[in-house]
Image (cartoon, rainbow, N blue to C red; front, side, top):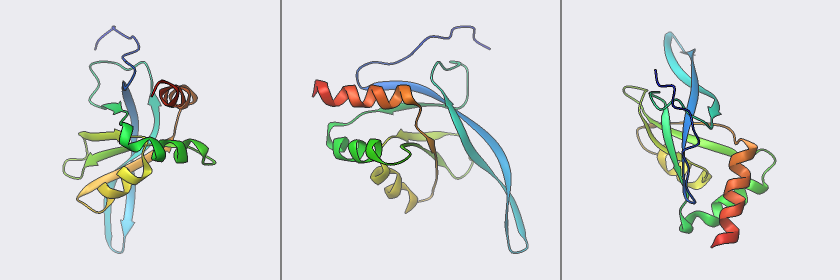
Length: 127
């Protein structure tokens, strides 16, 4: 375990640790275990398996604005379905998250931390 804990962000990227729990899903006679996204650690443990890089893209600015203006802005973690470990994408764009839902990925979301909201809002002022 690493004791190095420091913010790992730039103007357009932020390394964030996703916090998951496992829970049971029942569908008919089938019971399976699935991850649930319960939060984010903004000063991540760099040895964690649950690291994702939130990368801001100019072409997604409208999506970010719409997300920030919503009642509860969200961050989306897109994971491989087998195994449900590796974070493929961490995004603040609901549209990008929806695109992954149509594929073979698990898309999870949770409330965007206030610090991330402010960081994304400041991105608009710089571009």
